[in-house]
Image 1 (tube, rainbow, N blue to C red):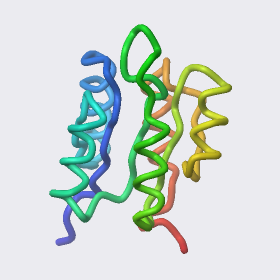
Image 2: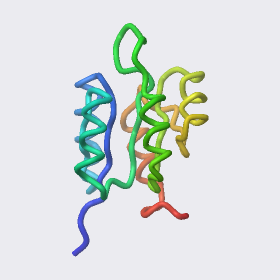
Image 3: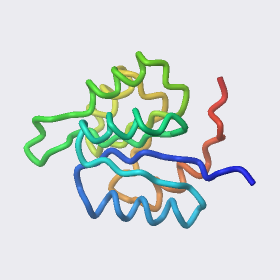
Image 4: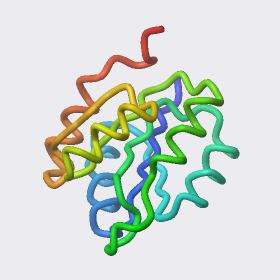
Length: 127
């Protein structure tokens, strides 16, 4: 029996991450969580079988820390899975796609819609 598809959630809001994780687990995904860019890097290093990453845009309420550098870093390392831009700010999602995200989901404020979006993706990601 194959293992569950691993998805990394990179978001600074605990409630958002936990709700997305719970909804994904109900759909038989294994969700890992990172509330900082540093934790996301560590998880990526320790879990080479992650097939999708859900990126929030900003990692603090002041909007001074973003995920753009992390997206560029992961893309340059040749990550082959889905990199999903989910910022609630349209300009940030646009910048996330420029940085390397290959999917965009404008539903981040509505976690169930985001999970439905992920459910509809084809795994593993087609090359």
